[in-house]
Length: 446
Image 1 (cartoon, rainbow, N blue to C red):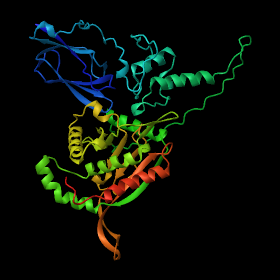
Image 2 (cartoon, rainbow, N blue to C red; image 1 turned 180 degrees about the vertical axis):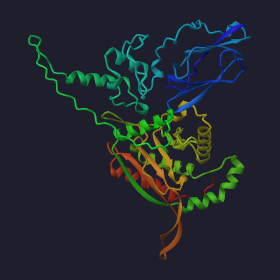
Image 3 (cartoon, rainbow, N blue to C red; image 1 turned 45 degrees about the horizontal axis):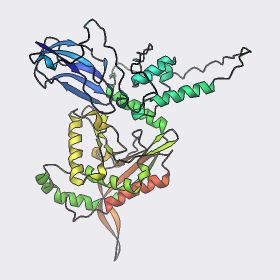
Image 4 (cartoon, rainbow, N blue to C red; image 1 turned 90 degrees about the horizontal axis):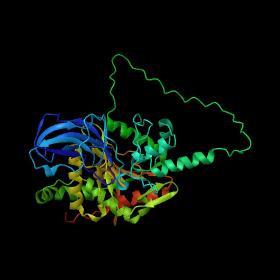
């Protein structure tokens, strides 16, 4: 019999670690090839880890809620395969309470560049950062431990990385500002230090709970969403501009072609791909809406990666990303939208499919809402909400004069980061999206 070492698979260029959510197989259980052994979580995406071999599970090297690094051995499977399938490294001893954490490679740490002449092995930090709800990379934890930064102090550092993460540069900038803020002391004279009393933090308002109320604990995804939304409001001064668009041509065109489109492409065409196409065109006209902010720097994005907010059956929200949306035709966008939306609801998205978005679209109209004021999906600087399409009487200009007709109308609302997007840019952009929608060619081939 041979032992196969199951490692935590690589789940994306920027994913360095994952949390073990649940073991579906226990030691002694028989495992079929490609059968799921455990469930893991990275940021927002939960994934399943299948077995590449058939055999019997011998050891679990991580407990539930433990964090494992990509490439670490997480389980031992006894298999009938040749001994050549064994990994060259020996399996960790069962007596170890937890495997040693390996230093992730530079490319595996989101938003973090490796320190100059950083040794390959970083000692595990002595401080316990596991109590924080925020994610910290092993490199950031190591720097914090070496510099004596407590968990409460680390939690106050504003992160500029993806999902508001604290990057290496963030913590180094914090250390530099903390050092420069310290008073210079003459070596020959002992300084007189006056300790000012710290203001007590304002207590959280008490929440009254009656006997008939139900207390529901937030799940992991809801906590992440809550933290991300609060961070976004703290980071960006939000401004929202509104435009009403006449989308009668789109409604009539879709009604005419949808059956033939579904028969030919085996895909249903919704309004979302049409909105995404218009957004991608408008971004090309106004590329400064497709940026992010890094301190005092504006990073102009080369790619147009449009995220689409998707409601999950659990009531939570996830934002899969259509990469290079400007390079896809309407059929390609439709297939991408349907595929990502379906797999999002089935909890089958890969971590890379919810990362690197540069602009987000949310369809509040799918819930019957006519407009909304969405919160920016950091580190992006704008998000567009499209409202429900409603029939309304509207004034139409004709060569014979103005007439009133029943038209299909909808509101577009753009929330943007007023640090880098002013009203002229934000207003012009959302107006341009509406112009593309209103100018839809009803004779266009799908």
